[in-house]
Amino acid sequence: QKEVEQNSGPLSVPEGAIASLNCTYSDRVSQSFFWYRQYSGKSPELIMSIYSNGDKEDGRFTAQLNKASQYVSLLIRDSQPSDSATYLCAVHRGSTLGRLYFGRGTQLTVWP
Amino acid sequence: DVKVTQSSRYLVKRTGEKVFLECVQDMDHENMFWYRQDPGLGLRLIYFSYDVKMKEKGDIPEGYSVSREKKERFSLILESASTNQTSMYLCASSSTLSVASPNYEQFFGPGTRLTVL
Image 1: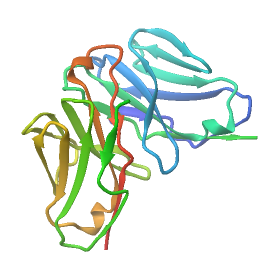
Image 2: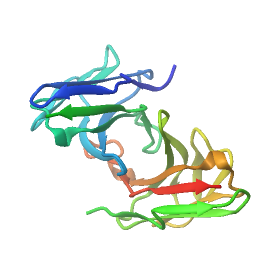
Image 3: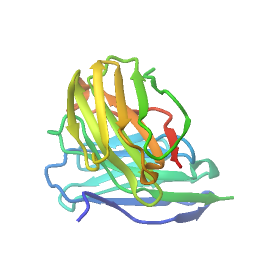
């Protein structure tokens, strides 16, 4: 089983809808969880991080973490065409010198 | 602002050539990472370094080596380039002090798209 699995996509939603991106991880000692956004031809940029069970909101983005289910998700409300990108889930175990384990990414397209 | 720079955006090399990819960060970060990214395979870690002259293998180190002689610079070396090493190479850096903190972040460079013919 891969360390970090993401729903394979691609995901396509209309403008204004909620986009839901999901991620599961295999190692129970994982401590920190990250969502990176990567536009085509660009490098990844961090958009959300979450460490505790529950929800964390930042503008139109909400990260949700459930450590018991080893599940982390990203909700994008009021999706915009500018949100069209690949979203990468990453996990940090806390004991590996800052190494992150990345999922393969989910490509999101928001159509007008 | 953290800045991670990579020596080239695009590079074309021939099979068998020795290739050097350079990465420089300006935030005094202890940790530096080299990834390659391929369609459908995501980001895969090649090597990382947590201090000068220290290195750790990632998931796909075969065919690669690294060098970290100065804190700000981390080099990826392809000893004898092969066509299956055609890929996007991304460098990243992070602070050790922030590893266990809510502010932990890896900062990525712009990437080098390497084509081996």
